[in-house]
Image (tube, rainbow, N blue to C red; front, side, top):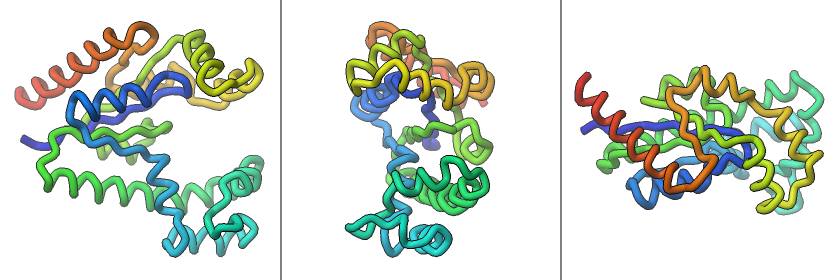
Length: 205
């Protein structure tokens, strides 16, 4: 049977990491995180690294030779043109690596490939995936998790929430909503049900 390709997205504090862990350990998924791949494609010696240092200058390189994300972030944070230029360098490289990994896992006989990214609603991801799931968690639960696990202040949490994609956009663009606000056993059941429904749909089609 053809490998299923599921996308996982959602806001900070929604519990995506635990969902990914469950999919990997209990459902046999190969999990791929776009943010980790973005780090990998920017390693010294890569084509992406060369383009970035040529455009932004050596000031974005840290003492150990790697891209300093804080320095780079301060450059692009308030400059839309430079941010667009950065995305044009990094996103294609990440997408190519995702597609390469998908093909590699399919050759291995992997049945479920899971991709996690903050902006899975973008078209290039839609074209890669069979379904995109929005991991929804009530705002008050997310706030509590961020305070307990990361020590964030209310002000920082509000700033993060304001900068992220709205819940309405997630619900509009994603194929399925997985509620992760309560007991994780309930989330597990929802995930298993979603995977079964996806399998049934593929058989029927």
